[in-house]
Image 1 (tube, protein in one colour):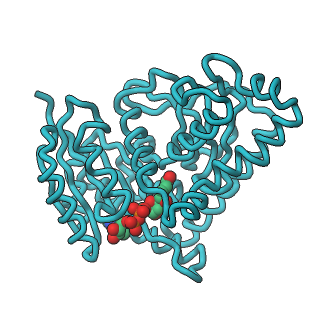
Image 2: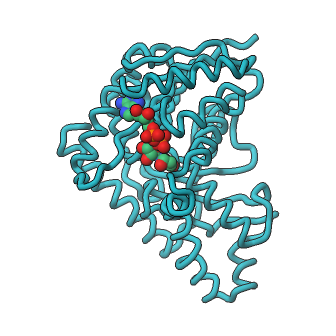
Length: 334
Ligand code: NAX
């Protein structure tokens, strides 16, 4: 029998936490042969909700679930962690300045990074979901100097999956037939969902849609419909559902970890990983790229052609990431 994997989830008493826990315990994240132990981290006000979720996990009798513990202190919560899902964050309150938001989140992700540094397992893999996700991941990574920066990632898989959903509906194909879609940059409205290399059942999406809509029509659809629809989908969900994305965010988090651990046999996906300078993204920024998972590690897909339009879009989102990095530097958070 395989040794259980220890998964630490922050914000375990919140909405996304509630949607994540049952899928992790069912084996959807790490596969049907891998038992898990769950460490649930909350702030004191969230502990009762996390304890309630723990009771329901017990009542679900998942054969793969080898234990659940609830914590309000990061140090024991990350002790021995193999996987860390950092979901709990400080939301922007009305009238809050960006600096205040970054400082509040620095107060969360700094200590959590330090706790990971102190006690996590050697194979720790971290994904930050709590916003601003890329910069929160940067803060956590820089507070964990002994952990390779490659182990700290931020979630852009929800954006990627949103792009797949929109594209499938437009092209009239199944999501499973799509390849080569990329989200670049920040998990924010500046992100760039890129279809230049996308294929549907092996055919170029841009060629398909250019044939259908004409070159101008394709460009108009891309710039005026597809890109903003994907980038602003979070706001659309709030508008329609009356509350923010929860199950889709949890599902994307499951996909991110699943592929990181088990591989990407169907081609690349998107994740925010530390830049090695690829595609002109300054080294050290945590930015979304086309990535493959090879032998349990994310690898930025090399050598893709990036045209002038794409270069401009990527540069704009990366400029925002640089501003966020400068702001957290000025606050002494990294
Ligand atoms: P909720 O407010 O339902 O849950 C957040 C939970 O985190 C609360 O229970 C809170 O007590 C807890 N928490 C706060 N500080 C904590 C700390 N220091 N340690 C442990 N727990 C802490 O929010 P939810 O809807 O679950 O969203 C969570 C985060 O995901 C938000 O920051 C949200 O902006 C972000 N999202 C990120 C997405 C992405 O694609 N990267 C998409 C979905 C979502 O908007």
